[in-house]
Structures are given as structure tokens and as C-alpha cells.
Image (tube, rainbow, N blue to C red; front, side, top):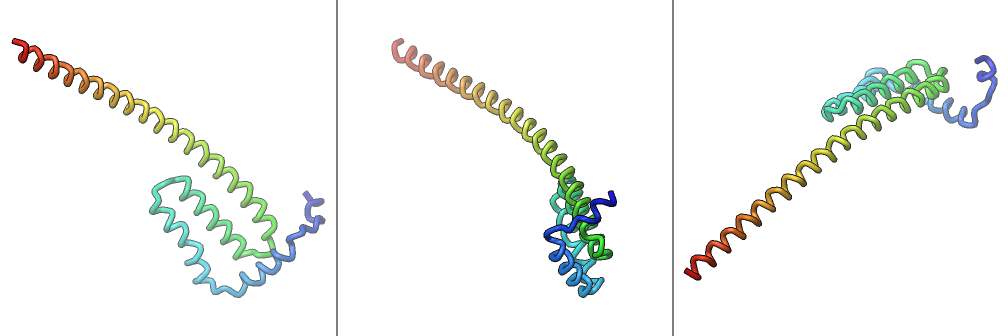
Length: 134
């Protein structure tokens, strides 16, 4: 793992500039800004969104507290973020499968109701034509 510390990342200067900017933000304002996405995510009532926003807020807090470890936090954040994204994809696929099954059932119900309505109309037409011929 020590060999990774030697590598100079091409965007290391951007990270250093970001760390300098973060050190100038008041702590109260930073915490409020970090908790705002989590509070908004709670209104979505989707656990993957809440989990993702909470994780990103914790990640941002870690970068705010220790900007010197920003590169490590970035790598860890990208990894955990990809796991959350993968889980979210699995959950959405399962929900879509359930919705497709529900739509298939609804299509069958509509077809059954249309067939029943056609039979009813056909009976009505045939019974009225029989009454006219009598």
C-alpha cells in the first residue's frame, strides 16, 4: 500500500485547492450544508436515496474535517458510492419486474371486461332483433 502514496495524481493540485477552500468555511454553515441533502432525502421515502445521501454527507464531512486525506476519502467514497448504485439498480430492477407483472394482470382484467361487455352488447342486440321479428 505504501507504493500508492508515491504516485502523484494528475488532479492532486485541484484537491489541494479544494482543501484550502474548505478550511475557510465556518463549521456551523458546513454542517448545515452537509445535513440538508439528508433531510431532503428523507422526504423521498426511498431507502437507497437516503442511504446514498447520508453516505455522501459523511464523505463530505470527512473531507471537511481532514482535507489532507482527501485522496483516500475520494477513493473510498467512489467505492462505497458504486456499491450503493449497484444495490439501487438491483432494487429498481426488482420493482420494475413487480410493476410489469401488475400491468400484465391489469391487461388481462381489461381484456376480460371488454369480452364480457361485447357479449352483453351482442346478447342485447340479438334479443332486441328477436323481439322485433316476433
